[in-house]
Image (tube, rainbow, N blue to C red; front, side, top):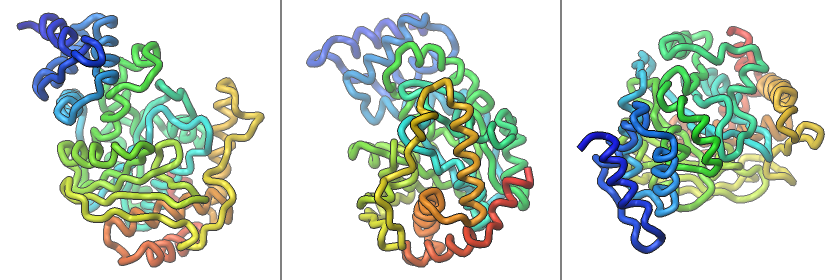
Length: 356
């Protein structure tokens, strides 16, 4: 059957109500998503496909099939670095707290771990502050090609890069207007951060989650996407930085197999906070103020990289320590935190932002 007939058949199966909807195969999921990416399907049917998949709840095979379709439309580049960190923060951004993770890449690079972070301008369901907004406020080139991002990663003076979805998977990015009309989260929000357009000799996916069902889903998708390992952290707003106030949880996977499940305690590495994260200032909460909010976050991040103590510093310390531990560079999170503190206090990672 042709692509339109296939989508017709898929929708008949997956959109039949809460009790009668049926799952589809990995191959049908992949081919259906490919037809949508190839603009062979009308927007109404594309939206029904994404909504119905979400409402019946996607199976692992369906998730994998959609991820494989996205990967076939992605421009990939291999880098020469030994271990590449891939930070997969939510593409829809943050709207309740400050995204400290925008400043993890230069810090990790100074720690000897080249790092790529990716995203886009704005997308549902949050339409929040994104890494692209913050890097624009810093004067970064947010429209680097995949090759340009590769060059930054391999440059020992820089060692990190942002890459936009519009550059590595244009067909997926073309779906943003449709996704914004759907409003709610779809399977694309789950899988898009696991594409990984840049790869090292070994590539390690770092992801955040909120709902407890997601760690095994993310680990399986990371394995199918070709990541060497994955670190899945219960983070604020689904990001990779845990709560600074309360106990947390993270999972460490290698080749899709759970190696460690760790209860996190911020006080164990000297973090004392009355708040779980830095809140968005009241005067910058409205969406029309997002440019000024990005400048505010950029200033806070630069101060933290220069060694200024506070919640931003603590967030960077916490998340970077978990990554250092995950890669077995240190044998404990406490020892990892001591290594990270030395770099933060030195202010050296700030040079990796100014070098751009």
